[in-house]
Image (cartoon, rainbow, N blue to C red):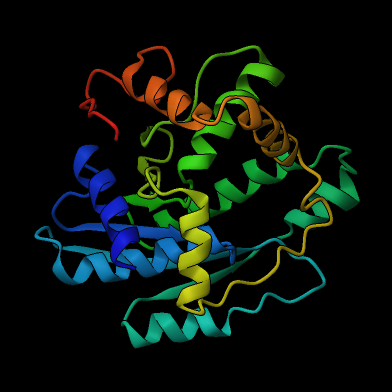
Amino acid sequence: MRKMLSYLRRAVDDYHMIAPNDKIAVGISGGKDSIVLFQALIQLKRFYPVPFQLVGITVDLGFDTPLQTEEIQKIAEENQVPYHVIKTQIKEIVFDIRKEENPCSLCAKLRKGALMDAAKQLGCNKVALGHHYDDVIETFFMKLLYEGNIGCFSPVTYLSRQDITQIRPLIFAPEAEIKSTAKRLSLPVFKNPCPADGETKRQEIKDFIYQLRKKYPDLKEKVFGGLCRGRLSGFTDEKTPRKKTK
């Protein structure tokens, strides 16, 4: 966890993600990224010089397979962090009513809305999401190839409609490191019940990047560095300090 904390601390400090007395909701999907983020923020809270509160939130999409959240609840209780499972009908809307052929976009929008609403109701002013280093690069290629845009999500995003700020503290953490951390600590990762899991456009991009790196081994480093230095991407803005990446 020490290495993961170094990635997280760097992002938090570089992009001023945490201010005194923030109440931060951590979106916990059950995947390795969000659970590692939750555990890392719990650890950070113990020694970070700026005081902040944490709340764990899992959005239940309503699939027939029940979510295995008992171990997450146990981690939260042991660390005196409130944890909430929010029941929704997102599965019914996306798959049964709308019958979406490409369900991921609508599902993500509804899931994000449910998470933000729950965070506001619980008095949180920030929401921490588990996007990591590889997500940055994949999102860049997804926007380029599927939308014809050059851009990415931002490390810190203020949502004016909800009056809440999204932060992504794992943006410097490679996916392989997150996976290794989750396995080493035996964190309670559970499988995504969505039938589209593993057959998404993001998976296509993962495969595309894997093939490109056979010829261009430093592809990820070049893309990530370009986004950190660039102004067109949305990854940085005039209020966000640009730091050199290693």
